[in-house]
Image (cartoon, rainbow, N blue to C red; front, side, top):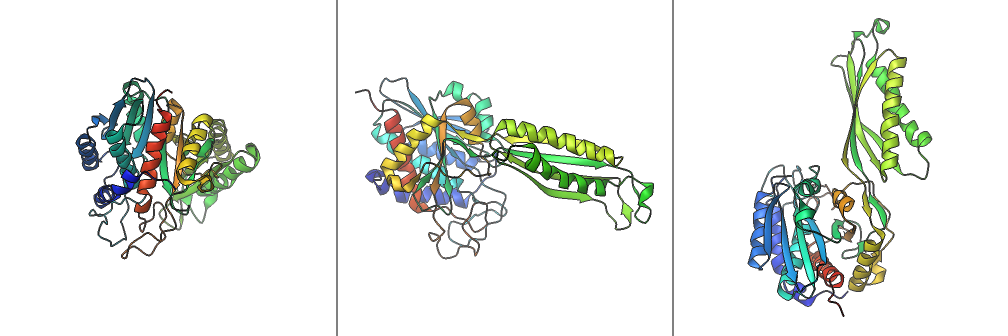
Length: 398
């Protein structure tokens, strides 16, 4: 592993920033303190700062030389509405809010890279440091794009990364093509006719009808899509009735759909509505069908992925980089940026949890877990990767 010495020397400073952010988590589109902190640090290091994209998002700009080439590096800043169980010194100061996904670490890694890039400027072109709000369900990437992110700050390519518990600390993993799934929600309201539960023939039972719909939806996965096309329909909610002796007037079903491609998503949405309406009609009920597309699939472009894999391999050794990692059905709104620009999203290993200090919660150190904490030992790895990525992408012409 060949980390940048100056970044290693600054690790304590960047770690302190990370832990400060962890102690003061802010939910989506409320990241005012975090945004202020990031802006102040960038300005302290002589970096041009632009604020107000996606409400609380900001972009730092570092220029050097005469090249017109550019690169975008992205980190997310928001926390989760989760009560932290850890008791260490940098635990959340706010009830019901926690950095349980490592966005505090992502922000700190990009700040570490920004500090070094601003000081050394060993590149020819423009670096755009994208600090994004509201990844956790708010579509902050989409909102920054709507506010003119890529028009105001052109990027030939854009890169980002997410810590991944369970992967060896400081290793990397990615793949060309789909890396993460689309995220979508559905709600199916089944409307029938209420009756006494002892005389169900006098009504049209939405609970029974809904149960048939829940079962039939899995037939879309097993019989409508190609077996080689990965997809998930998970029904996670079924609500109906208030009493044991009453057939209610309506019931509703909710859940999520995940796919790696939009054509498969189109098929599933269409078939879900057709199946739901047809089954409801068979039992003299009706259906209100709602399908909300949240995040598209995160699809890495091949050339930029190969480039990022090469940089990571030079940094930590090829044996510590998995260039064909198994995609995950989790979702990520960096996908919106990859719809606009070529680029690559990577996972950086966060380890098995042995890094946590005394006082951590009893649960595993997994994402979205109340006992999670980011591994500070990988801060210089992520920062060095971003710096090397810039220096190679914007290498001066020979």
